[in-house]
Image (cartoon, rainbow over the protein chains, first blue to last red):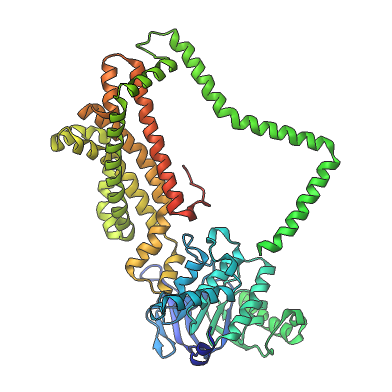
Length: 269
Length: 289
């Protein structure tokens, strides 16, 4: 998050080409979760993936992260085909997934495990402090996760993902379990943070307002089997601030209705 | 975020105290509640004192060979202490326990980690764990004597043998139950196999391991006392056996209570270690203990 890093680093591109995924329940009958998914995410872009539950959006993002294998097709992050976990990846999990036995500071420092070997101890410490400052957790650095609220845990998870200045950030319904006010606030903070970095972001959510507020593009997925139904360009100017009336913005309302319409249409099928 | 919540809490408690002041019967109810709580806190002490009194009354009307009174037991305790018989017995007991229990801890945790991480190893050793869990291990005392004689090694073996299984089982369960999300985290941030164990699986198992250590401590105590009674006739078990054979019931009971003291001290040490070394477990309930 230093100025030089912002200049030199560039967000990764993501190419998902003809990807399918099926779980083998029995050898003879396989359940198809994703069929022929095609999607290209540009460097530095913020793309949300929405869809009814069961459309495979979490599976898709886990496959991009190298956490789940895909049955056919190809996923490429930057110029490397995904086999294991890609380099310089940040992942924010649904339930924060912090280590209860580590303080906030030590949890955030875990994000430097891959790249930290290149840093001096002092530099690593500075980066951890910066990341905690970025998400407003500096005062809670020595707390254990068990002592934090849900929103603060998720901030720590975000700081852990940001600390290595990732080329690609994957977020799996990170605000889904939070109360409405905390969620709105974290959305605004996330938008501000992402605007200051060059990272590419893929964001899974079932909250259409959230997707409209944060994204450059929204990928709507259909269910059984999951595939890309439509991709909506969010042509709202940035920065988008709720207190300046984004919620009343007619274009935002139109986009939300359009996305919701697509999801509902799919469910009615 | 905590700061923004505090003022509203203040408001709520202000409102609450106002309404209490307005309604006098409520204040009386508060006083009654406090009195009830004091009563509840004092109940264990009352219970123990009452028990000792009843024991004293029954004991003083019974043949002292069948039942010694609490006062006689305390006198016997003092006698054992001042004659210099108790201290070495206590030391032997603590030594046997420390050796056998520490061995069980090291072996139990190491093998528990291996079993918890490797489904293959788990399947291979499962029959033996089930066998030793089902076997009354005390029945193996004669075999242990044949193998190790009647000295310190035999006593340590029996203490170890009784204690190790709960540690193995609880460690492997705790390691096996590492949440998938934490394993995902360790993959995303590229921890190597060794770090996954030391930084994720093992810390995750700590509460479960300590629960196992508590159970194992009770079993180790049993093993230690039995070994001292039946094999070497030494230490606290020796005092209990010897005075039992001499029908000196008060001295026997003094030995028994010293053995429970060993248990209490060891359990307290374990708890101190847990709080000092694993401060993050403080906020967690000790579970089913």
